[in-house]
Image (cartoon, rainbow, N blue to C red; front, side, top):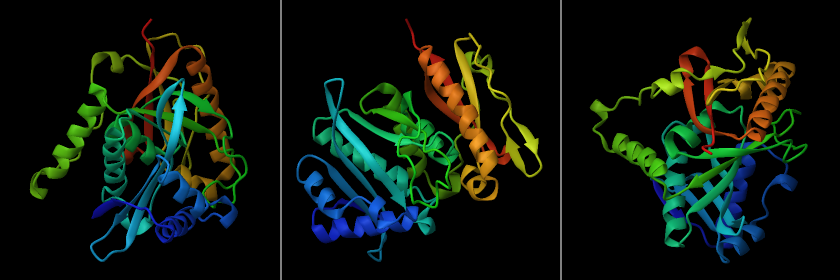
Length: 288
């Protein structure tokens, strides 16, 4: 796999075509190639991931941003074609994006992410080391994308603080795993890291509802140092197969994230249990 910056209008058009293919959106909801072109020539970055045969398998697009006076990038889109998923393309694109940001003397990249996409949460928290303290309700409104299926487009705002020890430790672990001989590679252990996490209270213990996982009632009164918020691993499938249940998950988790963020908590980790069909965010109260 080769990852390189894209600069020309034709390359921007290829990235826009890939965006439309990945999300199944109408042209009106795809980033115009001319806007991509201007952004990359005025401080942004558009990266393409290419297979050995030259096929573009993924892309990452970021534009200049300012948060509370701090310059950074807003990563508007990260996409990988279905055939290339599970091979580390998304992680490699984010690592390359970080390298380009550091060369530009930037140490912050932000982006929005669906709180109910477990695979994305695993990438963002367990592999990249983001933190989250902002929740946006229906950020993008109604969309033509097949992936939204009429459910509000609520989003977490990921903060990737590129030079913190936490981020550097997570990325070092990812790189070590990738460089290990294939015969010795094992998935990183899934589970809690210390006794403080063991003591965290689960705010919405799920229940089995036939073939699907349904959310338990949201407990908005927990007062511990750490809180767990559970999500299913099959939310995308749920959107098409059980849209009413998908909406229930959206509303329950919306109440939890908004309540606890307003009380000074932030999301600092994510534990994925694929075999059990669920994942859990770890929310921790910010130190005074």
